[in-house]
Amino acid sequence: MSNHPLVWDLVERKRDAFVDLSDRVWETPETCYMETQSAAAHRQMLATQGFRITDNVASIPTALVGEAGDGGPVIAFLGEYDALAGLSQKSGAVAHEPLIAGANGHGCGHNLLGSASLLAATAMKDWLEQTGTPGRVRYYGCPAEEGGAAKAFMVRAGAFDDVDIAISWHPSNFAGVQRETSLANCRIDFEFFGRAAHAAAVPELGRSSLDAVELMSVGVNYMREHMHSDCRIHYAVLDSGGISPNVVQAYAKVRYVVRAPDLSGLFALIERVKKVAEGAALMTETRMESTVLAGVSNLIVNTPLMDAMQGVWESLGPAAFDQADIAFAEQIRATLTPEDIAASWNQERLDQRDIPLTDFILPPHNEVRQMGGSTDVGDVSWVVPTVQAYGPTLAIGTQLHTWQVVAQGQSPLAHKGMVATAKVMAATGLAALQSADLREAAWVDLKRRRKGQDYISPIPEGAEPPVAAMTVK
Ligand SMILES: [Zn+2]
Image 1 (cartoon, rainbow, N blue to C red):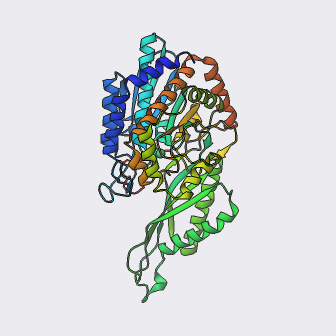
Image 2: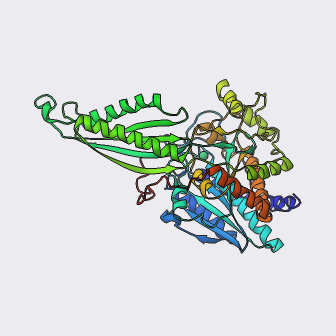
Image 3: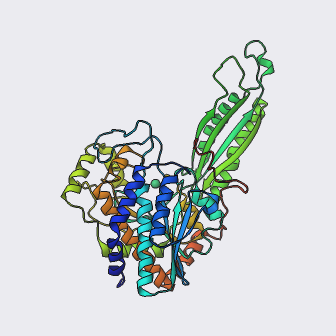
């Protein structure tokens, strides 16, 4: 613990530059593999801070890695900077007011996410230099977390092969350690090829691809009764075969997202969904082709690293919010429903309190809790012991992917939460760098949790990052 004040001071000294980076990324919200300006801003900061930069990681133009230090273990900080479509919102406004109607917005707080991770990496770099300690620190600039699975492509390309420990965080209502696992998922397009015909004159000559899509949905909906209740399947019809009811639809396309608590369960469920698709093709005398676009693995948590990070949070204490922060959070809270607020407390199994901003550190627990969604951090967590913080950057009750997240993204309260989390990540990284025992325990825990399973990428061989196909997610 004795090194914490020094690395915290190193974070504090550079806070303004990184708050500015976060604010600039907020101003240029870019989605899924299109984060050109955001990645360039991170690249520029890496160069300013003196990192050795690798561009175009895993052949992704907006993925980059910065490294500093020599020898020793490799500590990785994962950052993100992608935004979401349709969530444009005025900064600091306490009502839904898009800046530009229909435009992108940072509805998941990834402007803060990338900046705090890079700040933590920079503080650790400065610490290595000041103390002359061997060791390497890396910042991974990871695009397309929202639906693009960039980290899974980066893992497949070997970008994490020599990493000892990986650390990240996510903007949140609370301060603490992320202890929930997430679902593995896979995005698959199913295309059906039929035969067009006049739907009234010669319907017997037509073979409808739209029928195949509908029958596939019916089949999958019946299958839900007979799958694990933690699994999820959603779909969207991307092409229903045209707008003319009097033409038998010769082509149709449906996109499925299949989710399961672990990789083996995911692969098994995908096979069942494919059988349903084949059945639909058989029934309609159409031809079916399926293409896996992207996939992510379930998240594997790590007890020794979670314990280490918990200790750091408890020694740092909660972020020091002031009266102005509390007043702003109160105004945001007034836009939330009682259900929104209750959901945030329930998620953490905590008794609800009447506070707009957190004033405590989440208590530790060792239950296995499943988070509904998925993250591409999951793939990193299969190949490197990984730990993530929750950083308090949002009024309690704020749900991710909403305008309220965008409205708070440049606020002083978000800046305070981001800097506090950078301190926690930097000190946790330092603990891992300095303790071979902690690193060893983290690897033992990872192997135990993998239960002998090898990491198999959920992305099929030959599939490339969908850089060009990102307009339809
Ligand atoms: Zn997010």
